[in-house]
Image (cartoon, one colour):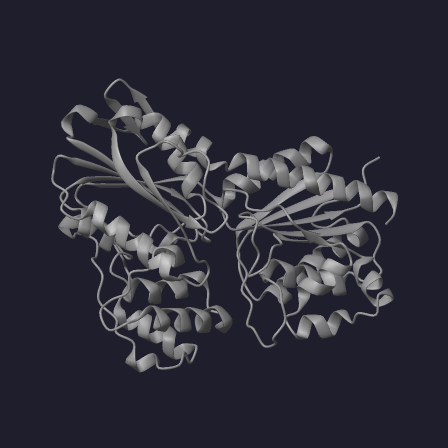
Amino acid sequence: MGAHDRGLQAAAQSLMKAALAAVDPAAAVRRAVRRAGDVLAVGGRRYNLADYERVRLVAGGKAAVAMAGAAVDILAERLSSGVVVTKYGHGGGPTTGAPLQMIEAGHPVPDENSLRGAQAIADVVSGATERDLLICLISGGGSALLTLPVEGLSLSDVQSLTNALLRSGATIHEMNTVRKHWSRIKGGQLARLAAPATVITLILSDVVGDSLETIASGPTVPDPTTTSDAQAVLEHYAIPAAGRIPLQETPKAGDPAFQRVQNLIVASNRLAATAAVARARDLGFNTLLMGTFLEGEAREVGIVAAGLAKAIVTHSDPAPAPACLVWGGETTVTVRGAGKGGRNQELALAAALALDGWPDVLVVALATDGTDGPTDAAGAVVTGETAQRARKLGLVPLEALQANDSYPLLDATGSLLKTGPTGTNVNDLLFILAGHLP
């Protein structure tokens, strides 16, 4: 690797660090919630804790532990009890000693602990009265981690359906449209269980567009989708047994269940992306935020990313070198092969092929939660030399891409990003760097 590539690598590491720091879940909760005595201020609303007999907390998602830790610090002696459900390897730490039950569960495919966690949360909120205050902390991953299927649908059914949807290329909006209608707590149904309690839901967004009803399948949000919408998704992607899946309707806007509910996004992909932009400018790059609505097939987005890098080098367009383009969002992968990888790794491998032989260019594809697909990698960083290094090792990049087998090649070429669980989850980031700093 040349000196210029090493400089771009160092810059990329700095951008990732700045982006992740900006969406630290505990800091996000502390920014959103202030307590002065018995007065709790949340997003412009005030709650008098003296009005409530019990304050309970439920949290679900990959950022649940850090969010709960901050909430425990704020609520202190007023917190009665609660349940925290997170992904395996994401538990422990901040909530130690608090009156909370901790459950680690399966993701992206739910398991027995996903059922146990969802039932524990349902048990906490059921039977609440007007004198109860429920703090609900939601982050990405909650759709799988909190699984409580409708009658007639087994855990095995949910696992099979989830696997089929994950492999189909369906967007997260489409997947969660279905999940809401086979669940007893998603799609606003947790709010229905909690009524008439007061509910404050703090949300770390991991979906494109920050739609409240999609994040973790919107457990405390009115659901604009219907069982017909869910059925249409199942049929569009030819999901096996689509016509025999029991679906139930969800509460809509205007339902009394939402009269005492506040939903507030406390961190998002845009916050991470703008932090990366600021850091890139500090480093001396001509920097553009390309948006936070990036979607599409991962391998096709990788080709687009490479094209932008080439345009910078060749035509100083859309920015002159040294340039940094920042994009946020979430791509999808239609699985055709039996390989190992994730959407960010597939995007990066496609970019590496398209950049083959180009100097002074680098592409980073990062899952902000530290987990890209069913692997231990968070994504990958590739340059114009990546494909060449692979061939020298006897690997064939195009064959790996066609087999959805990006992980082994990127691992062999030293291109994988391995951060471990970051404790946050605000979707994916894509950095395109071209040129070199003086």
